[in-house]
Length: 84
Image (cartoon, rainbow, N blue to C red; front, side, top):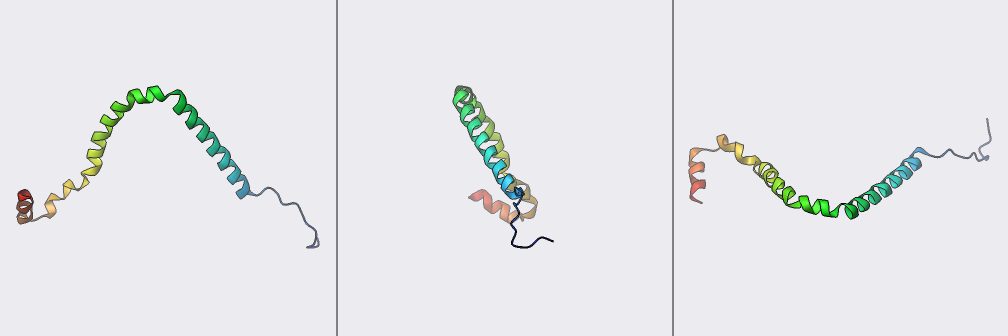
């Protein structure tokens, strides 16, 4: 057994290496995003109207989720909604 006063160099910790890998990855993603935006700006702007038109049906699908609940209402409630 070694005495407790002797200091052993601790190996590079797993948490520290994960943090370092995350930082390097974030820097890489940031640089890649800047370069892609700078070099392909005109291509993206050319497709922007089509992307907006594509977003319309997707928003329609996701924003009208409650339309399938008609069977849960009474006929009096349904007729009351038509007047509004």
